[in-house]
Length: 454
View (cartoon, rainbow, N blue to C red):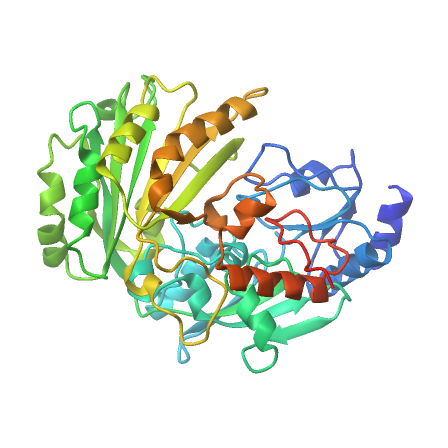
């Protein structure tokens, strides 16, 4: 243990790890394996007091500070002090108030399982293994988004440690500026240790996927786009495209094909859902159909995303509309002949996402109708190739682009790209708050909004 970790360990209840020590790699490496944090010390926080000790130490020594629970959306690596919150997983549900409070390391799976016995569910995302706090700080458009809005719209309280190591219980009454910024602004104003949110009276959904071969149904993306124009707000849907290698461990109908998976999450009766989905089933040969009534505890089956950590990068755009020609080009660009493996994800937005919440927050581009993302695994030496391919694939969508979603930006963004996630006035307001709460720019691992100049 070096001098830095010894001094930190004397202040904390949870363990502190130095480079090369047992536990160091386990704590610093999350779901995203590409370019992980390289801290001089990792604080495996056991609670808020450990977070305060780590923040105080970083501030005293002007060390960079980063926080990691699951590490899915790691934007950029940093040295200095890393706070690992994966031990902070407590969840408390108040069924009468229909709320849940959870610690910084809790995943959506933790919250879902705690809420389910009460017939309630959070506004969780497509992958239950994602950290609930980090997801919500970035906005959060999940499986029930078109009916209930962004996860950030339903936050009641944020427990925050600011860079002076003081704890705050942030609400609309106690700290209106912080409460506005933390809900959708990305969280660069301190370290969140807990959050209280609304729960929805949902215990099941009609959901799953319809799988098509893009070679047999080349117009599947545009057909889905046209279908979304007539669906109610209770219907949230998306499409993913990816190439399936011809390997025996994969489902036989999908092997060796470029597959489009239409993902459905419907809040309504099974009969209504079947009627709404029928036009999609009739598009062409269905390779696989997993649509069914699901308890919300099995909501991860809708997208059925892999749960193994890997190295990857992504780019995304929020758009007013989807052009048929751009969609056809995207199908080709991400197909079996693509220079790198490409996973495409499109999501239908609108509905409640387009409406302002009861208490305003920093979520940007509520007028976006769709999001478009392309993601690729990255092998050593491929990062520039992947970046160029992603830029080329998204270029046809630029005429309808409003900006970016920080939640789906897996990799570093420059200042202009981060700015594009917000309305200009909101970005300026966030920069002013950054100057107030983190004037030395210690929190630099996230998608950074530079402090405004005074």
